[in-house]
Image 1: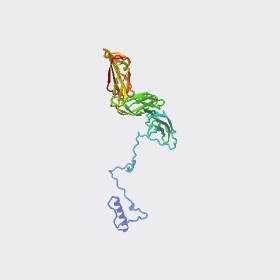
Image 2: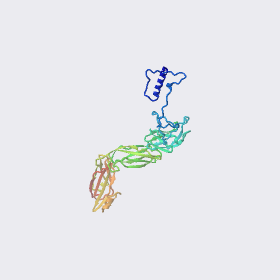
Image 3: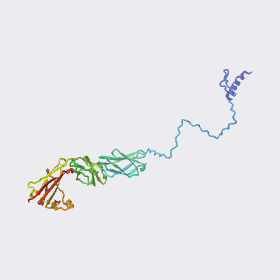
Image 4: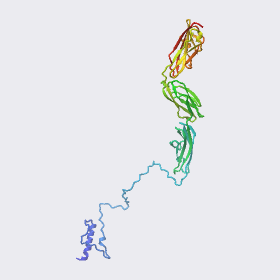
Length: 400
């Protein structure tokens, strides 16, 4: 055999086995690579094409092969057509919007509301209705203002001077401010003549420094009773006895006043506190029988005493009547003696004469006393409306 052909043929055989899908991985240890000869074909570099499988269709040369998706790619979600697209700020827009507003008053009372009315708003690029507006009221609260709402109100619950500020901002972030001030005060001054009283004891309250323009003052006495007063400086009498529901008053009572003007009502302002004491004592009364009580001239006046340990004597009720022969008379309200024959006449003529006591003593002028049997009855009422027992004196008048 020609030794020069042996190695090239062996290499070709090995190469062919690889191309044909043989299991050969490496050549035998004795095989060596052979350099190609000049002018000849390198048999080791030539590979046979695999025989096509007739059962597999041939690829269509016009098909486009899509690359397999990269698992590391992030898929962007499709945009939501309902989303609002924020305007992109214009980097060239540096001009701030301009706006204004007006307050209905610069001076109000505590509890009243200021009214803010929006004015014109302009900007070089952003439409007026898209300019944001925020009102700060100066008391730690704020309100977002809508472009299509003309008025807003805000109530102040404390005294002071408050700066109202509205901030305007356009789409580019440029902003400006407009300001105004409002002063909140408490109207009026108040004073009680007494701060500790007995039940039913009269005392007064004085309203002063009532501002001009006050239309009325609603006075809540604190016992369920409410009175409407004129809108001016004044004094008013009152007393505490029973509440409107009928219960007796005892202890501290707080009264309040609400002032009104063209801006409406103020808060209910505390006028003051009054301590009410209940009186458990009943007053005592005496009727003095004069010396020579059998004589008419001794009865020009009916007299006696009235005393009380608690709230004090308020008044004395005195009745006078006489029997002359078989006829009965009562000392009537017009200070004349009226003949009484029926119950209706007794109810009409036999009435109490109310007199005041001074230093514990009282007296009633009796006119036209005549002979016969005279009765004088008296009872005392104290300031707390307690009545004492009746005291009675009977005298037989025989002489002038």
